[in-house]
Image (cartoon, rainbow, N blue to C red; front, side):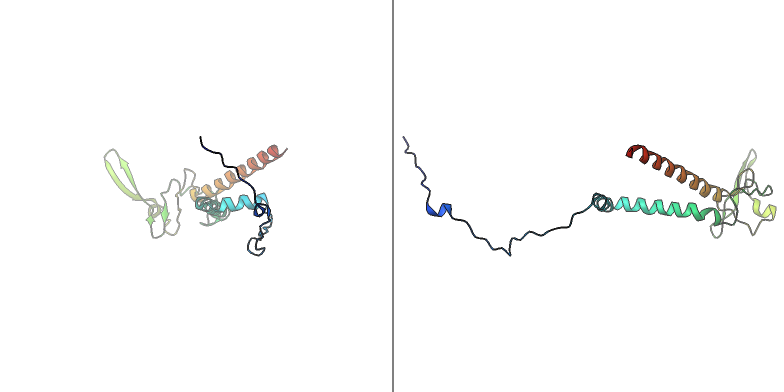
Length: 158
């Protein structure tokens, strides 16, 4: 049989170890609030930053968009109904019309004498500018979303 070896403690087992106080000093960090931690976590993702930039751009365009073309969103021009989009240097307002006898290309702007007028998204059946109406609709949608968020926040907090 194997003889069991017993450990006998020595004097050095009971001595305190001295350490260098300057090498292991703890660094004291200032406390970080939950909001700041959440903001750091949010900003750490590139897609979050891109989403915020797009949202801010949409908010900006919903504010200034209806006024970019000079046409009001609720103004009717019954002479300019169902016009195709006309964008300077990109689209001249021509559209292809499909008939039973074939196709034809027409430009309603020149037919109506509206050469100096442009509608970026065209007009609807009442002659209203679709570009201005889209940005006005975005404004309404953002206000509804903001109201729903505030109501949801209030219900969640209480």
